[in-house]
Length: 138
Picture 1 (cartoon, rainbow, N blue to C red):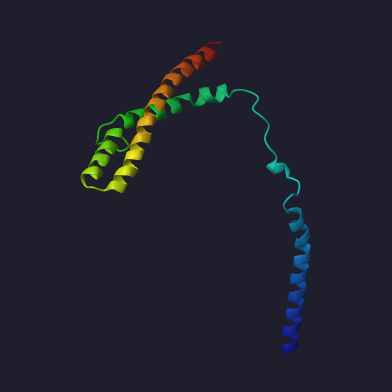
Picture 2 (tube, rainbow, N blue to C red; picture 1 turned 45 degrees about the vertical axis):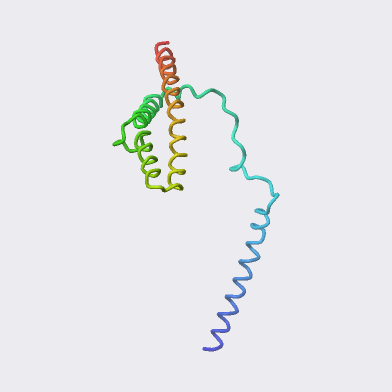
């Protein structure tokens, strides 16, 4: 029985050594500086402007932008609105939580800056919609 354990241990050691030697060439290929595989090669530059895909996604894009503008313009009861965040900023200031006030006020500034960007995007999407409709009629 002792002999069979030693034999099994020796076979295991030989198998482990063989596995290590077999893996060595694979590890050498993955070394830094090795040539890039085809999967990691850069993709080619776009051949068009993606107009077809933009027109296809236009309704969902318009819905998303409109929902965001509506939410931002909502009153203090609307989660995510500027008015609600203003109320939270005022509450933090009144309670003397200066760190919370600073954090929320910075978020409020970012949110207020987002609204004109989204409104501009709404106007741009109207032009895109007109263009996409004209393309369908051609």
